[in-house]
Every structure is written in C-alpha cells, then in structure tokens.
Image (tube, rainbow, N blue to C red; front, side, top):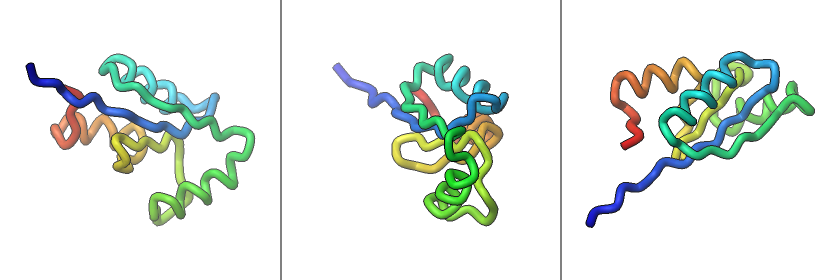
Length: 90
C-alpha cells in the first residue's frame, strides 16, 4: 500500500481581504490543511516582516502562502502554479 504525502500550508491573512478568503476556500476545496496567521493586529509591521522573510522586492501583500515550507506567494500565484502543475495536491 502506498501512502501519499499530504501537503501542509501556512497562510498569512487579513480578515477584510477577499483574496485571503479565496485562497482559504481553494485550499479547503483541495483538502490542504493550513495554519492561518492573522495579521490585522499589526498589519504594517507584518508587511515589512514578510517582505524580509520571503525576500520580496516590495512590501508583502495578502495573502502570503507557504506550502510544505516553500513560499508560493499570493492567491494569483497559487492559482497560476496550480494551473501550470508546478504544485499539485494529489
């Protein structure tokens, strides 16, 4: 019997962010468990912190998604990488 390794995600979010909601729905639909890190209490500092953490050229936008320790980017990046089969959830 072969066992498939399930993906694990982290998602940095803001409550009012529609793309954060879309990303969580997408991950749920693909049965990808995630830890949500809500950032509204310290949004501006989190933008700077995530910029440095992920070596971004500009301040981070939300959501920021990490799957199995690999920084994916935002919602559009997630969809693009899934569509191109760069990431899969099998």
